[in-house]
Length: 271
Image (cartoon, rainbow, N blue to C red):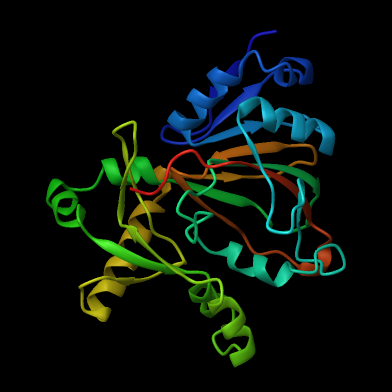
């Protein structure tokens, strides 16, 4: 069986329809990776992968990246009974890319819906390649050499404006990272590196730097660059973490919403 594809918006996200056997045999892995790089997000509607099948599918696309605690499949939920570190996921409600604390961020995430919230809980994605491409040329020139500080601890203030000193110190131990504002990829394409981990533009007045980061976040999340996924149980969504940002829309932590995630190991450092 060949792949049937349908673009979901002009600038981001493509639906891919194929049966499990076709997806798991790896014959179309190169085609899927190319499509992922070009479109940013791939949707496999109601494919109903088991954990074992999701791991096997992930491994057809590249090298599986384990989670921090060594798990292969990570439970994305705000339910502390299912995920003892669920507080860390509160930052996922705000625009971000994963791995800004790493020299080589993950290539992609694969997320499968197991239990949904009655309200909220959609996932939104924005294309940071397209957002860069559409910038005015004078902005591109001005941003070419800018560097930005990123940290996990900065995300706390999005959901907890008055954290305890103990919580702040815990997050600060993760460290800080200096990254380019514009990532020039090996392919020659360029994307913006922004989001809720970004907190300081090096060499720029703090007020001006903050205003710039907010302006670029507003720019990159304009409707023409965004796809919102309305989940159905069994959906699997893959996104290119190097060329998109994402966020979950708010939902009730007691709803039992549960997603299972696998990741692809990064292949390219920030540059």
